[in-house]
Length: 269
Ligand SMILES: [Zn+2]
Image 1 (cartoon, rainbow, N blue to C red):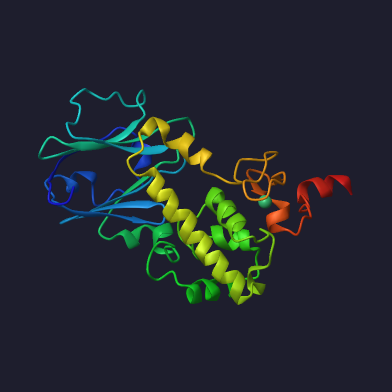
Image 2 (cartoon, helix red, strand yellow):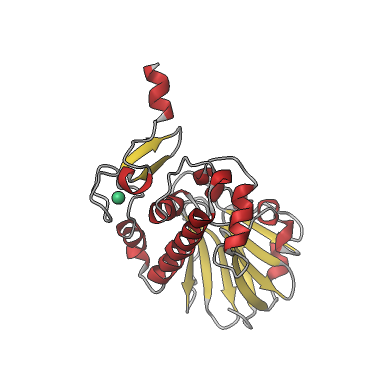
């Protein structure tokens, strides 16, 4: 997109746009300077304002070499925003499902987006060193699972890839992050960068229709409760919370002991 001019922006999901000034129309006529990812935010920089998007769970950006010219009916299409470029290309930002959580901002700088300004270190950036990870982990006494998924510490690691990284590092998700020794931090650093860079590589060029299935198939433990661990063959277990669950392998990660399911043990007391 860099070097192309934004010709028009058509917003059809009005609740997705979280800012009022500058107006969306301020993007029209601007030349795109580049696109960056920060944590889970996509930031499109122009010679004027930035367009920042958080796709949440159901959002997609769909690129077109030739943008369709069909009219979009607000409220009846998954398209939230359509952006046309000066050479006929463009993209739609869409959101499927009823849980509307897609968010868009038009801002002078990405730092004006509150949750983006608070993001911690990006695990695929050169700043994510073993020492930096050790400092971040040792500054908290939460579980290593919680520390890994706290966006203000490490940006962009969610529930699935934290399960995968902890399994690869052979660490219990409940381990106190302040008590990880040097060897454990090194293993976790290798695991986080390995799991994420492999995921990026695997996803590149994959057809939209295959992307979700491919992501699922590549997981060793996440979403695989009851199946065999690909490393040791033990049965993968899970701990459930109110809205989410984590998966782990007892043999690889917890010395063979199943973790207490806090919800379940409360019921049994
Ligand atoms: Zn295992």
